[in-house]
Image (tube, rainbow, N blue to C red; front, top):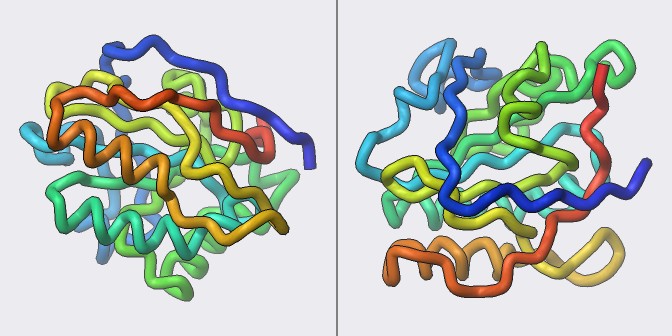
Length: 187
């Protein structure tokens, strides 16, 4: 496991488009999900994640709870896996679907086979969080919370605070600290 920190993306930058297959189409609402499929007038979050990374596994249950909180507040959340599945078969499209079903992900879990979406967003690690406002402008690029595997229970406190600030203030004012996790497994 190579420890990697996310790099800051310019706040206010527009969300790059995507059109990716959903490993859990019953949640996504279709086999393919695009940026345009998300509600135009609603904020949304994109989380680059995977099945095998200990950092993702550490936050997974809290991420599921956070996704439910986001949904209740009208914020869409989408997970995207961009890892090389030749090197990491546990991150394959089929394994993603199994994991999403097993953990009952309440959010679409999409597969970025060609890694073009991760590159367009500037994703560096798993998990890596991007929160956009209703105009698809980046409002938060930071970590989920301060915990790490073996160092406290994950709550998603920082990410959820960013969501609340965006909804209540129209802007995220809190400090934005980089995500930390496994590097995306590039081809």
